[in-house]
Length: 175
Image (tube, rainbow, N blue to C red):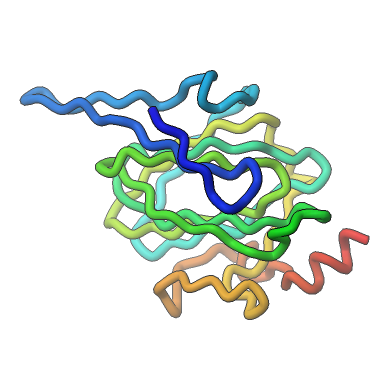
């Protein structure tokens, strides 16, 4: 496993080897010495092609997240919303897939979203805090201030994400 730093403090990509043979494959998912955080809650999601989930975060009970793709391929986007961060409002994106051996660690204070790129996309993530529906916030995936190029004009999104806050409104609500 190799930790690849990004320009965002504590946000990093983990590259792992995939061991293949005639029976299939094996890859290491997580090593405490690489991701030095306590992760106590895991989630698995399944998304079809062109499904966009996000941008989500918890404000009162924030979560570190460690993400990997079990099947398929996703565009993974993290937006820095840490109040005093030098990279506030900036985003990082990476393609994670079952084949490329990449994982993403997203620290507390980032909004997070994914776009399904294959017919079926199964994502596994471990979190440092339990899900708290009362502190969940959604930021508009296509907010013009964020300037995220998702590569799609009309993704499939949930009703909740369709009613998400603009970054401007999020900032007002945080004060």
